Length: 364
Ligand SMILES: [Ca+2]
Image 1 (tube, rainbow, N blue to C red):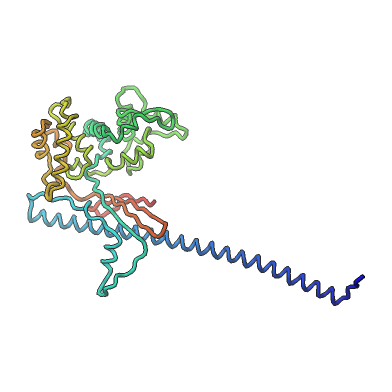
Image 2: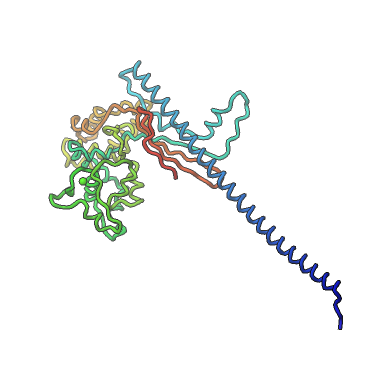
């Protein structure tokens, strides 16, 4: 049998120590390598997020600059040409990163490299239906009818068929009532003299009450019974909560113009309002808007004349109750998108150019 001397034992221990040390070092090294990789990835993502966000913010700033310049130019032009109607150009001028690159290219011919992409688009709030007017006693009836007419848009048809989360259907009339009830000052349900406005909300898991006060933002519409994310996505384009005044025929969506026409008809039951005459009238509006100065010419009197040509008889006084011919460029919502690699950031902001205030800001 082999006898191990003290030297051999020492050597064995040394080998074991070295092996253990090597193993531990390998584990530590692998771990560090992994952590370093994760850190690098996190840093890269963080950098992309930051660049994407600033790209969106830059696009927002440029678009705001364009809007301010346009507003000023329009005010100046109006001084010299008070009776010449001016077109609304803002929606035709989207801001994008290429423009920014061109702006900061100074004397050098090679443009400054800006990473990522960005684009911003301005949408006038004017032309949308102001839901807060439902809270005004003098406007309530008129705005509610306009709202009801706006919901005739075939885009909404499927919502009256769909069941909502609680297995109930909401009709067009009911929805117009729920929106009105949420914002109007009284506590009585629309279309009834005894119904309680809070009934539907009291049955929810997280119960709350109607607001009975003006909306602070359009997103608040999602609190209204019967409005889900999809429906809100459709409604968002046609409504506003800012005091934009009457409907501007130059910028309003066609279904909103159609709702105005039906409200201002000499005979509200005229079949022409739902037939080819109406189709033709809307087509004429689209064509007029596309002409160089067409947007500026489109007012209540023009609409009445156009209507008469296709058998849609409009009452000019009623039209003037809804239409605001004096299109101002004060309220805009800007949607800015910034990109860097796989990261995209969106900013939605609403401005009042008259007071130079940002009244709404949402980052996605
Ligand atoms: Ca109410």
